[in-house]
Length: 273
Image (cartoon, rainbow, N blue to C red; front, side):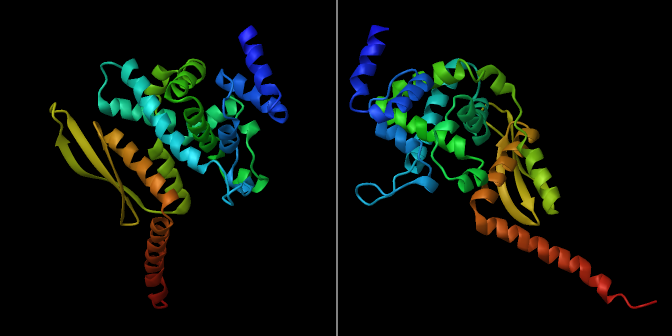
């Protein structure tokens, strides 16, 4: 208790205006920040960023990039030691469930991170990944401030110990296939899950590779130890491609328009009875 008060007294005077932020971060992380500027940057969305001293705009996208890599490394480390007999495919699938944006969005809400973010209302209403991106930026800030071990402590003791059950998460089915099917139905886009390869790995286990076909155009592929798993991975990769690659999404809709136009043409050419 004395040590905690001593640390607080040491930082209180030079950072009096940041006292509430220090307290909130200490409750969230389990330790006081050493370099508060990293955390301020992590909490600054691009929509509310202001020019810095060097004329550059400081926001959390660079920390998000760093935190994404650190988070994947830490999660891989934890899963590797937790599931000592599971194969690489299982570990990869479980890690993807933990670091996916929906999970990170939920974590940002539960630890109170969303309440500390600086972003304008328009951006907040149109960006469903705001919290998840900020969570990655926060991990990046912890890494720069305290190093890898502090990031590991935060994930293991603050997140996985209280908010995520690793064993439950491993068996949770994230149905990307259903999401893709639902989206295609709403947009009236033809969808096909095409098995393009069936192989054997070094242990003679079957490995399936599936490709998504949208309106006759090649989407992404997915690999798994079952057809179902390959469908899920292909659907996940295709959803990401549709969101990230505007040219690809546009080509799918253009192909749909060409198909529907061809379907309507013969009707117009039918002579009157």
